Length: 377
Image (cartoon, rainbow, N blue to C red; front, top):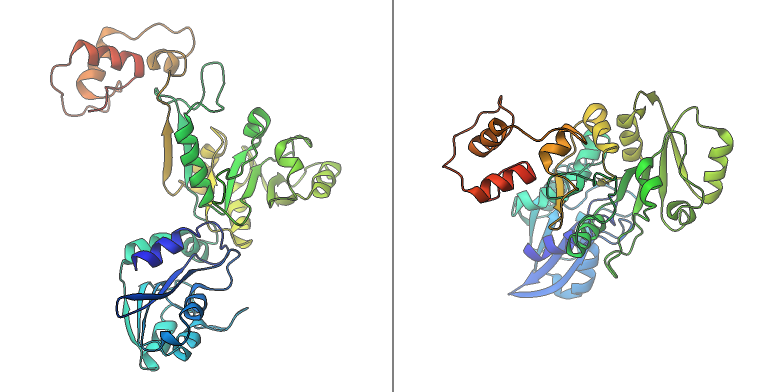
């Protein structure tokens, strides 16, 4: 099952609207066949693994991260392929939350005399299909958040610079995170400031282009930006206002953009409706990047993101001690009472009184003044 999970994990971001599934056929300690859902969602993992095993699959055990499908869609039901191959036992990680399946695959296998064990590595298996399950249950993709910050917790310097504030290892990790997503979403402010490509730039990491989503209510994105000139290379969606200029719409559509018209809101567009529209297109995992624009809209209009990945710079902070930058440029330094309260209780907020700490060293005091929080243990 560990191998099946690893195979499925390697396909995250490439199988939407279907979930990423891994399957392994084994007998007498030997692996006879192993596969994951193909990019684009078909063929499914089980038929591929069974085809690799061939006639040797008879009497073997099939390990699969998700319950085999029992309905006829674009392809025949996977349970029928499992039965026809003569599999003796099926070990399943998680049940399929699709109402067309949800236990029917297991029932069909047992009715055919196949031993079924379910729930093996269930937590890990369910984590792999979390986005797929959320789309089925709520009609929208799972929405994790990625933040890059300076040591003092800022997403940009005092001068407004935010591009590459982290080091090369963090950027590689961020690209690996993108590689596991169906699409990445930013606000138009990020596009105008950084001109990002929003791609996964790890050679060989993906077979299917990463989708791009831009929250741009009035289509302010330039027609010569990196996103605009590559829209025919990767699916690119713009969440726009219903009153956006028709000529501007036509220009973007000519470049290959997909425009999603949404109701207006004080923040630009109703992002909850945008997430529903993206879910209807089949997206299951949408990574939110891009500084301070999409995040507040998510909090206020679409709910908290499902988890976050935070990358902190190890180099210089955002240009000033955290107390100064919190108070605003040119504000006076903190009082001695504020410094000592922060050192004793771990926060400058006197309403959030915590457990009193041991007497601090001079180094701890100066770290706290400079970075706005006590040093890590």
